[in-house]
Image (tube, rainbow, N blue to C red; front, side, top):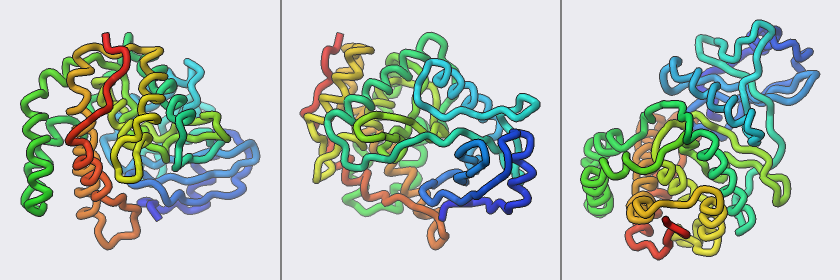
Length: 316
């Protein structure tokens, strides 16, 4: 179970009292997380999610809270930090930054269809449109510089075949870094995978886990999403689902010619980011009772992104 910091019932009851949500009925750790400690919390007045932040500096937490407030106020189905009776959204529990959020309804859809993908593309466009004029700045700690540095460090850990796959994309990142960073920007979710979206039937009811959110090129955010939501059986891109997602997005926020030019590279960049982070996690947490996602999934996806037939629609 990926609960890095255990919490006792008395500790939790003391933490929850200032929210004035009634008695604590039950709580349980959430096994799916890979970076933070998360708990489902049942109170007399509803269902909530408690998150203890395990990775990243505590000074980043106001950014996450402010971003979720912006999106919540724009009527998007996202969690947001509940305030205690003194108006505090960010507090401390067991020595870790902690926040309490409403639990969103719905389930993850692991075998999405075109309709699911279109709704995801539409929501992602709304997030970008809601933030691009007044971007909340946060530099990601998994950005292009990190990819170049971590990739170089990990090369010696890889087979010759893996090195031959990784090195050309690292070289392309270095060569095109300035062009990538000059693309249209907004706030990004940066982790919009299937297990971070909730559906009730065919209706999108929630987007969760914003702890990789940052400011940056919108195209990068879209590439991350397409790389997970639009997979075919061989980890290539399912064109009908990808076209549904991109078409719904572009109907609200048309793509630019510069984005169209860098699209094939950006799909590979998004693969490299998660291949590297999963390789690092696999080494760091080896033998521990922690959820570790298989790095090979993104190795295979990167191999499948060497030749791309998918083009961006309506590029201006």
